[in-house]
Image 1 (cartoon, rainbow, N blue to C red):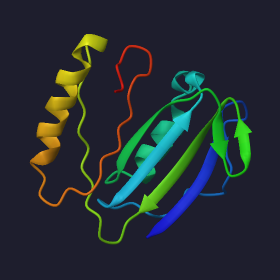
Image 2 (cartoon, rainbow, N blue to C red; image 1 turned 180 degrees about the vertical axis):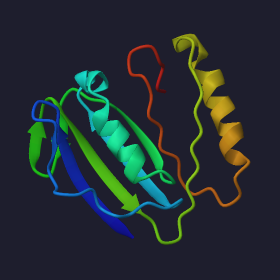
Image 3 (cartoon, rainbow, N blue to C red; image 1 turned 90 degrees about the vertical axis):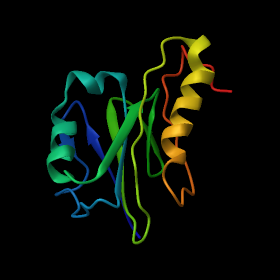
Image 4 (cartoon, rainbow, N blue to C red; image 1 turned 90 degrees about the horizontal axis):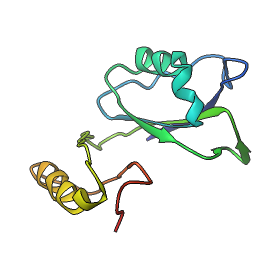
Length: 133
């Protein structure tokens, strides 16, 4: 397994690394956690999508990004993990309201259970209108 961690500064529009690491594959997970304002400057996401076209790319907004030992604002914190033997699958669905949370969870579970050998699930969700329990 290879793990790379780096950040994008929204104000200076620059990466914390000179080049984005080479790690693209069907077994690569790209996680991006960014300030809510990151959606107004999508060039960082376009750069990741271009560098990692075969990878699974997910993320969400934060109220403070953690990169290394720093807590930052107005940035995007990225971790790229290239697994040796782990197959990845992305499943997504919309939640209409908090009342729909359980049914939405059941729908996602059905999609994921169709995958033999499933060992883990990571959920990223909207935080205000969803019942996380």
